[in-house]
Length: 143
Image 1 (tube, helix red, strand yellow):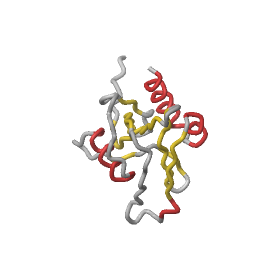
Image 2 (spheres, rainbow, N blue to C red; image 1 turned 60 degrees about the vertical axis):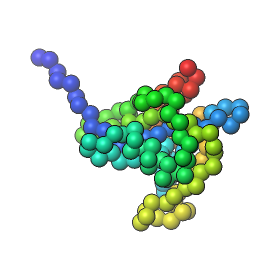
Image 3 (cartoon, one colour; image 1 turned 30 degrees about the vertical axis):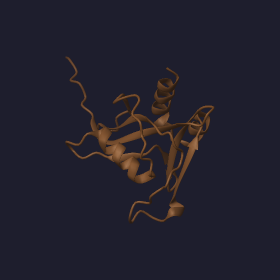
Image 4 (cartoon, one colour; image 1 turned 135 degrees about the vertical axis):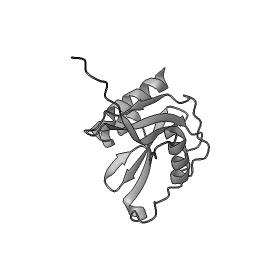
């Protein structure tokens, strides 16, 4: 009996934003309450995940110079029980100047934070589900 392929649903998209500080790449990590992640956006059916997350990242961080030097290369998280994934892309910012915007009705500025982190710091603060994404991004940066 052949197994049918499992289809995945892209319900959100993320953007691993990197900035070269003159010595090494640093990655933009965002904290919402107690959880760290890369910038993310919900993706409505029919929307382009890459465009959705680029627009949301610009709005959320004030970073308007995002360069997609890796085009639309992406890596998905492992699917959850309902088959949904978050699709992550890679972008570079020439500036490290972030102006963090708190989503309306989602708490206060104390509930949110950003950091430009090294790969080692990212490993320490990101949740285990993002290890596959971090590894992919670091391989892309090294290659």
